[in-house]
Amino acid sequence: MLMTPGPTAVPPRVRDRLSEPMPNPDIEQSFFDTYDGVCEKLQRVYDTDDDVVVMGGEGILGLEAAIASTVAPGDDVLCVSNGLYGDGFADFVESYGGEPTLVGADYTDPLDLAGVEAALDDGEFEVATMVHCETPTGTLNDIAPVLELCHDHGVLTVVDAVSSLGGTPVPSEHIDINLGASQKAFSSPPGLTTAAVSDRAWEVVEERDPDSLYTNLLPWRDTSEGFPYTHLGANVAALDESLSMLLEEGLDVVYERHEAAAAHCRERGADLGLDLYPDAERSAPTVTAFHLPGEAKRVQAELETDHDIVVATGLADLADDILRVGHMGYNADVEKVDRVMDAIEAIYPVK
Image (cartoon, rainbow, N blue to C red; front, side):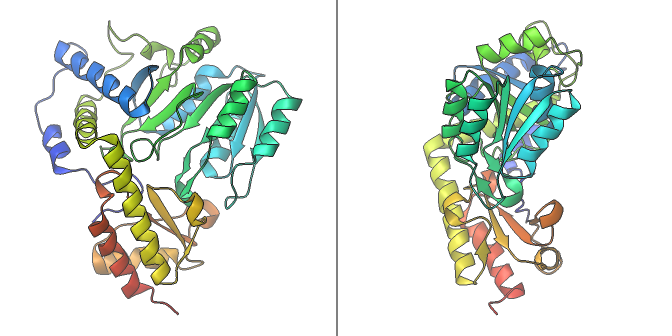
């Protein structure tokens, strides 16, 4: 059983859609109609009237493309971070010649709102970046106050909502480029980046006029005459089916299901004496990170070998200290969570 925080298990209905004959995405109108329908459904999930585009490429493509499309050499960019992906935005900025100012916080702390306010008062930034859900640490960030500050200072905002979109509400107001991906709470195969792009962001992208093709949002603004390159037909069809399932269930019901699965996972963890990383107040509805210093890789391996359950560990310096249970999308299910926690209890008893 796959219980990782992305890529997630793909439900049978989506797998069935994948097995259907696919139209030629370069030629046939039926594919263009499906693509347009996917974008319209995504607008409902994003809760926005902004344009939505779907690019062929895993979610990281969206993060890089947002920077490549908006940041010119020498531009000052505010990178707000308390995690690996927040830090990574600063690396992208540097790679495109921008000048990042990192307002960082410890991975167990909330975003540094006072530091953001001070930086905005002291500097002039073209773009600000932040992460809604830091998957490596299971953290859901309160980004609304940061977005409000950036809006008040006239700063374009880029948000990584890859691991939250479709599993919990994303505060879309004041987000200029809002990034998602197919393989997380949508429970589709990896391979697609989604982005809601404001009119203001399009103006910046047009002025920037990026010179790349693959990491350029601009060619996706109008696809009525075709796509920049052959689109991933089967992936788009799968995402279409995943979105239909989500909207048929109802977004409020979906969000409640994620909250229930997360709460149950953490209750079971508490019964086993497992600590959370971070605390419960800031833990994401889509993934739970348990703090198992020096034991995460062992427990992960035994879960797969002895119980046929695949979960994730942390990343980078936390690779052997964090065990992550993904309860997002199709796997936001209390019974599946119980199966995982029963197995962990057998492997990692209270000491």
